[in-house]
Every structure is written in C-alpha cells, then in structure tokens.
Length: 173
Image (tube, rainbow, N blue to C red; front, side):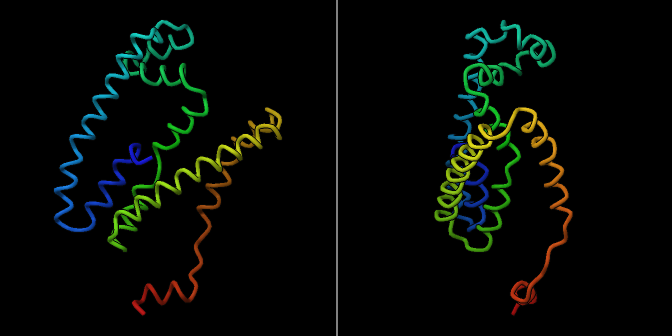
C-alpha cells in the first residue's frame, strides 16, 4: 500500500525537520520511475488490443489513448479491483498522515500504522462485500448503493459534540 501512497511518505517525512527534505528528494527518482512504469503500462494496454474491443469503443472515441490503462485494468482485472483502485483516489490518508506527523513527529510508526490499517480495511471490506453480495438481491444492492451516500451525507451534517476532555485539550489544559 505504501507504493500507492507516495503522498503519505512525502507528508510524513516533510513534517519532521529539514533533514527529511533530503530524503524526499532521494525518493523523487523512485516516484519518477513509477510514473514511467505507468506510461509503459499504457503502451502495454494498446499493444494488448484493448482499444479494439467493442465494449470500450465509445470510451476510446471520447478519451482517445488516455483510456488505454483504465481499459486494460477493466479488461484484465476483476471488477472489484478497479472499484477499489478508483475509490482510493479520493483517500483521506494524506490528511491523516500530515496531522499525525505534525503531532507526533515519528514517521516510521505512522507509515507502518497506515499500511497495516489499509490492509485490514481492505480485507474487512472484501469480506463484508462478499457477505452482502450473497445476502442481498441485485435490486436491493442497487437501492443500497443509491441510498448509502445519502446516509453518509446526512451523517456528516450532524454537528459534533465536544466533551470535557476535548474542551480541555483545545484550551491548552
């Protein structure tokens, strides 16, 4: 999971001190190499012929060669893999890493903790998805997918409660 989150490393390492900037600079060539490998994945996608598949024709007509890597993923990997990959694009891990790094200034346990939590979260989500997929009919699944974002949105509008320990920490006590 660390390879998928270079921003976590950057955020955590940049928060500690000036010496970490040197480490970040040392990691930039590795990140550039990863971007180069992504470009090679695009060439591999076009060489595999996914641009000729009829189910992807409207997307290639609209997005041209930019759709090559997503088409390869959609064609070569199971649908759940593409769903997890797309869901992780909006991940709030970077914000969590920056907050923890600013507070504790210990990058290694923070990065390892995020790594373990990510593995556990994906395993739990896969098990829950498998269980719910067997339990719910396709029509109920469609309703659940449609209603769940509305429930999350309603939950985020709920105001937070401040207890005494939070109030004391905020006042500097």
